[in-house]
Image (cartoon, rainbow, N blue to C red):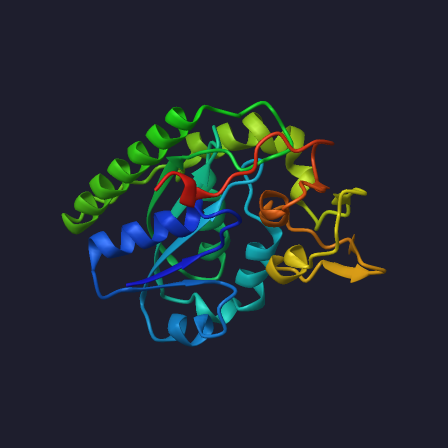
Length: 252
């Protein structure tokens, strides 16, 4: 088994690591940003794919990764794990359909409700205790899903027509346009001190420093990594103010 993930603030990374460790303590887990990930995929027939849902779709960086490496997925057995702040409908099914188009065999799916990482919106902000409980519940759900997978009865959350309709009518119909392309909406205000942290951690190389200030371009994949790590809370995307920065390390 090989675990593959894309993660902005750690939820999907944590989910992949726990899932794979529960299934096989010797399994590897890699980000799609890892330079070795392509070779590891070639050498493994069973993959666990984890990612954060965005409006019932997958981040553009992940969709591009799959399509740019379309030849890799043929005959691979894939289990998809989708992490979300509240609801996705067919979170795992959305990515599963893309992989299936490239001849992957979809084994199952799992939906995990975890703390919200959208730092500049108030809507899904929860208390420390509630966030910690969400992660504990997600971990229990992962362990149960692994047990069922070992018994040959994999969970199939997000996969099927009912889930697909829920994802489409619940979010994609109204908000799907927000993730169709990379975003040019990342904003950096005057609080920026030009520390370059955002430049270093952006998976898209979408930010640069000019005149000791960070400047964003038009290729943001909406992962919220820079927003949650900026020491001056100078970066926003959907909202105009950072309410709470999130990192999973705070809760595990």
